[in-house]
Length: 492
Image (cartoon, rainbow, N blue to C red):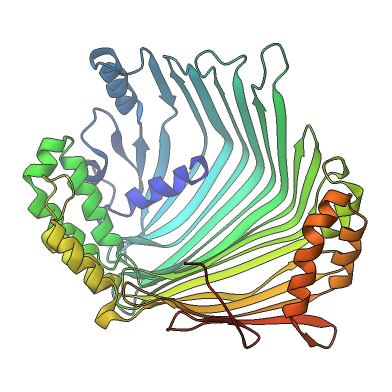
């Protein structure tokens, strides 16, 4: 969250209908008024000053900090002490004369906070330097391009957790990073865009209290590089900004409830939030130091491909851990060949109608009731989620667990819904069963007695395909299961 603070400020800047005219006092006032719609009327939070051909925009959140501090002093059950400090953010705005504006900054950033009471939390973070440069398009209410470079990020926190044997501490650092973004008018409304980020030389150290009289346990995580790329289509950025403005203008539950019809229409305007979103993120050369030794992962990757709240929604996630190593001290010698070096999981769900479901929910919601919608509407929501009673599709795309001398691969296709039993087809494929058998044979007798018969039974049910053992598994609509064509009873 700390690393996206400047992007959050950029998002707020995108809400401003900036004026294509020379820098003037009147222009500065109008910019400040527009930003206040999204940031609240705190005294001195937004300051805009004309400076020759540009405007200097200052965002000072100290007014919010003082408001929170006053709340802690006057509200029961709030922490006894709250002290917050964040250095102001300063941007230069330049009118390009064509409906676009240049936005730039070059500054450091510091934050400190103290939360009293039983947890006695203190936290801080800072950036040595943040430089950003972007172009804001008034008609899109978005940046068509944006780039942020930062150096020397550090953070630290400490908490006593009321009575713990010693304080829990956490420190983090990133040597340098870059974030870039682009946007254009969406083909189906909203905006289409890309984002990417790259951080290098990351480190996190936690010292966790464990036993009275003993030093805290230290966990040290390092990663040489962490980065990723994302694309999205049809993001309803303007509607999302309008929702933000709604809450800023109504800072109490009573005010929100009084205007829930306004909120209902604002939420409807934001559907489906986005048409699609996909992202690929990876960390390389990650090490986790513990009292038991160092765990390592050459590549830790995460991919996501999803839709917004559309009629045929889908969500696919892929996780991969490549080049995994574990400390020898925690693995008995006989089990070393069984430790996976690679793990790849690729799962997907599809076929739900989130468009009809979300539309009905927004039509019927009543924020003054505990469950938001009536029991009758809850039943109808489930019906709309599965159009015409069709089940959802569930997949395990080609996935695998790989060790030094074996690999277990799996693929699954299933359907499940509120009506009828689930159906499923799956294929498991194991190569290197000899490696597994040899490891079990060298294990203590108790392990051999338990694992040996299970492996023998699984091997006996498999079919041979070259050097691989294969299990074709099916679960039919009549509730019958089979493995390689052999009927199997199911527990009831």
